[in-house]
Every structure is written in structure tokens, then in C-alpha cells.
Length: 166
Image (cartoon, rainbow, N blue to C red):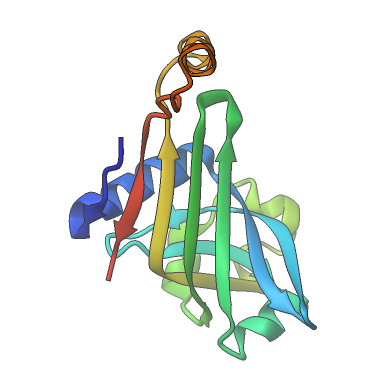
């Protein structure tokens, strides 16, 4: 069933889906081709901005400084949940935000801790998003597909729609 959501409802849905999945493919357009890399979502704030840590010495930071658009692709096939987020990225110089986002797992990537000079805070300002969320069990999804094959109809795929955040 198509369910487009607006404002606070859209942000709430974005948060619930992305924070449950946590890992995304951070996708950019570089040198005439699509580039993707895995990233861990640290937070989604009350405005729908998505927050990450990254290394200052990566191509990702160089691209971010040029204001390139990005897409975040979240996927949880076990739960039939998918999310695509489009926006723009920026490096945010904020010691306060570093403190808020820091967790012990971050130390694996940044052994110098919150004061590691390589640590950068990355914010993706969400412009639009789309989701597909089927809370049904695999068996229900299977029988829905089987019914569609037998009856020549389209299977029910759960909820999907656009998240209008701006």
C-alpha cells in the first residue's frame, strides 16, 4: 500500500527504518561513474539529517567539499525493508557533535579517540527519501507472490512511499 509521509511523520519513519538497519551504502557520482562505500549511521536528528564519522583523508571528504549530491541505500532483506535517501553532504566542524556521536565502536576506526585528527563528522542533509517496508513474515510474502502468480495479479508488497522531509 502506498503511503507518502510528510514532515514529522516522514522523519519518524526515516529514523525507525535507518536506525534499525544502521548500515548503508553511501553512494556518490565520481569520475563519470557511481561509487559506493559502506557507512555506519550514528544518528538521525530531529530534522532528518543523517550523521556519520569518516576519515579526513578519503575521497569521500574531497567529494563532500564540492557539494556533490549523495544517496544512502539501506537494505534489510530478512525483514523486507529498504530505504533510499537522497541529499547533500557536508563536513561539520563541531567538537560537541563529536562528543554526542562517539561510541566505543568508533575507536576501532579512530584509535586516537574523539581527538583523533583524522576524525571528521559528516552530515547528510536529507532532501527526499523513499521506502519499502513489508512487516509480513517470509511465509506471508511467499504466499502473496504465489497467489499473484496463480491469479495473474500483482503481489501485495507491504507499505511503500515517499518521505517528504523538506
